[in-house]
Image 1: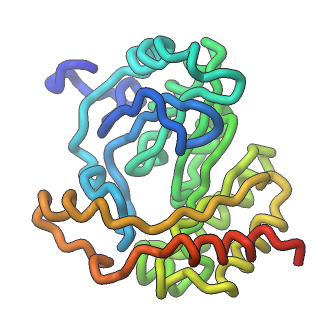
Image 2 (image 1 turned 45 degrees about the vertical axis):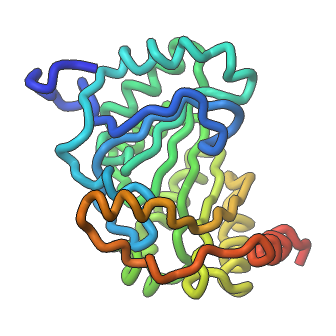
Length: 247
């Protein structure tokens, strides 16, 4: 962490929302998870609205974060490492690239959790230092993306195509929201997307949760999906069975 009055040179420091020392839901194994500050999207189901502000957060140097991550290396095992999530890490590609390069210098596996909404040359450089991507495919239609995310579906699909070209192992993830994307047809489209990209080796369906309501309340902001119920275990099991079926 550095003094907030220090000049923020491009790529030299990053705006960080929070850090989780030993995460188990953000990539393979046990992970040191870094949540970046700032996001260009406004997903109706966003779990972390407190990460939206691009000028918020705390400034960190890459070396300071890697130094902290190294304290937990003994817990990583052969699969664990560092995951950068958000917010949207692609808003700070040079910083995350520098961070991941330092991770590799220290023998630490790297994972990027992203919406895939940005693909620039700086992002491609970042991906050169990325061992795995967790790509959030929020919906399978352009209309739903525009209505509930704030961008078209072409951006994450182009990102996924690039990941395949670069042979980067990828996990597709989707938050299941009752009445929006919890149908058999939608899950089959997601399955088809995975099957037609050779780099995708895992698909995860995550249940929509509303524990984020308190964050919206604290920000004085309406939670757009407060009226939507969480999916039941039976609903999630049914969709998982469809996803895992051989057909």
